[in-house]
Length: 342
Ligand code: FNR
Image 1 (spheres, helix red, strand yellow):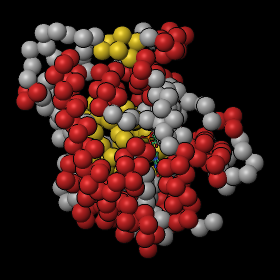
Image 2: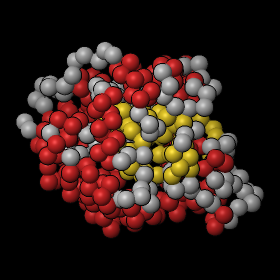
Image 3: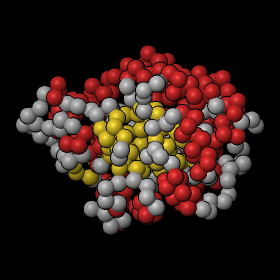
Image 4: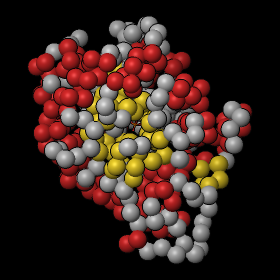
């Protein structure tokens, strides 16, 4: 199967499989405040993620790239939405364009449209320093995402089987690339053990991309005859993962992603400790079903409603939202207790 066909296959199966809706955000409760002393007009959504300044905590997370005309059109459409909404956008893995230059326009279109926007480059942890430099240059990227996707590779018949040396390569990239490095999962969550390893080699931005939204085990299984089902419910929920990283690595900048669907999820992710929130599958589905206009409306409505939630809890800024009291119940409470995290 050609790479272009596989990319489109992933998109189609991601849309069909949909979002699991098992992020555990329902275990997290805000504590109602009757005297918040805020007006909706007071609320500011700008945020800082390490050295990065973003006008909104919401961004379009890594999805497409390197798949010919179809993915070119999707990237172009998403980049236009990101520009109008003044939100960041990550491209999908650029490895294909590093191997075959004819594919690089699929990615470059994102910068061409979005001259001044925040754009994240993206490669897997198999990347060398030289490849990371080329990926950043290709987009004049503001930051680089390095994705970890062990489970997806294992489930894919043609996937990698050797995951040695990833941390060492990440360390080299952190020490050589001039833009901030974000290490991200791809829907299975980052544990406190992994977060500590990453922090030890100098990674200070982690996108947890937890379990509960897009599920690449299910997507890959949908594409094959001999299903490998035991990875279908594998992973750390987005909620538990944000808390694991927050409580284990002091000062780490956290991006919350994995199954984010609405302003309540976004507000809860930030209250748990995230500085920004990436949305992939939910935005892709909206874009494919309702086009640019539909996605523009969704992002605008989500941003407005996030401001209402911030007003209700008495938080004028993202930093204040990170400090509001929360109660964590249910399975997440048990998970965190057993993991020695309070
Ligand atoms: C992805 N994701 C992804 N991540 C990455 O770092 N590089 C990539 O190339 C891709 N490709 C990709 C394609 C498609 C079709 C989807 C839906 C997703 C993973 C994505 O960035 C995110 O981590 C997960 O999808 C979980 O977030 P959502 O989708 O539940 O919001």
